[in-house]
Length: 105
Image (cartoon, rainbow, N blue to C red; front, side, top):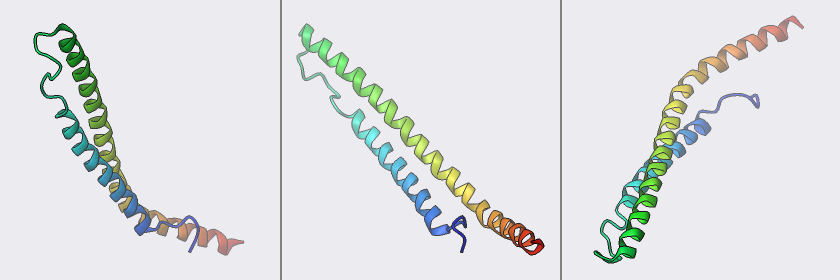
């Protein structure tokens, strides 16, 4: 087999890794959003309210970033799945072309 030949098992592993990463990141985003769901720093305490607001902004930004990464990983998995369906035909076509060129030499 050529070094460039498509290997379904290797490509399927890539699909699964991206899918697992996307799912785990999505779970992480959900759990991360639950952190500091209430102000434990002192209601009515100016410093406590400021600290809580800043912490919530940081958490919310982190949840957005993790969610974006989860969606990108899931999209990558879908793209790899779609591309993997084209590889066997592309390999066969390239093998035919290489054999044809090799026979002319």
